[in-house]
Amino acid sequence: DAGVIQSPRHEVTEMGQEVTLRCKPISGHDYLFWYRQTMMRGLELLIYFNNNVPIDDSGMPEDRFSAKMPNASFSTLKIQPSEPRDSAVYFCASSFLLAEPTDTQYFGPGTRLTVL
Amino acid sequence: QQQVKQSPQSLIVQKGGISIINCAYENTAFDYFPWYQQFPGKGPALLIAIRPDVSEKKEGRFTISFNKSAKQFSLHIMDSQPGDSATYFCAAHRGYQKVTFGTGTKLQVIP
Image (tube, rainbow over all chains, first blue to last red; front, side, top):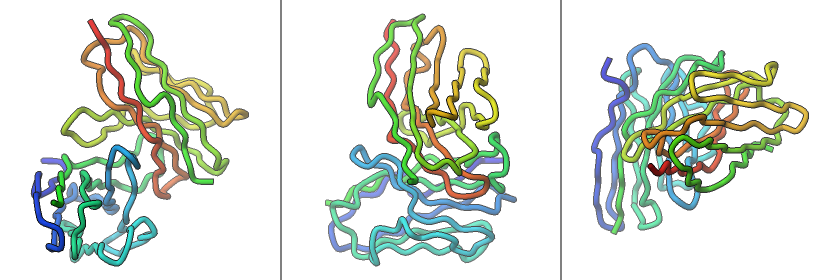
């Protein structure tokens, strides 16, 4: 398996533009997570899905952020309009049910977003 | 209630030394405690994990020590190597519920 795939790996955009980040989870995993990582705030969970249904979006910072999972093999995180404070590395992760300590989330390589 | 506090923020250890990273949690409902390792430019990856019904788990040079009464757990890296230089995150969750991560410790092992 290729692991979790994210695109693009790097994104530079100007303030006010729409940004769409993409994720392909590991085949067969039924949980998908979006995280944001910054030096100041560390690793923050934004939203997670189970079987394509959003379960908890309490970490989504504001209405400018939205996430969708139209099918089991694809998810998007959209920021519209983007702001400089959105600059961060965004990770997608997927997993089976986290029922055992060795069950884990598999992280993608991340998308480094820079908003100018 | 959901926080996991991690220290130190950064750590420099000489090759062959012991690296120790500490975490404390508040939510007594947490019942899984994984540690993740992250190299620059990569996503975090599971390193080792423990349930609270054991006080210690060892895998190679990596050991988790768990103190349930104090609500603390720690990662010990024995015989630290330059290749261990990475950022380490402790985490906690309850079963299938979302994982709460610590703030991370950047470890540098110098030759």
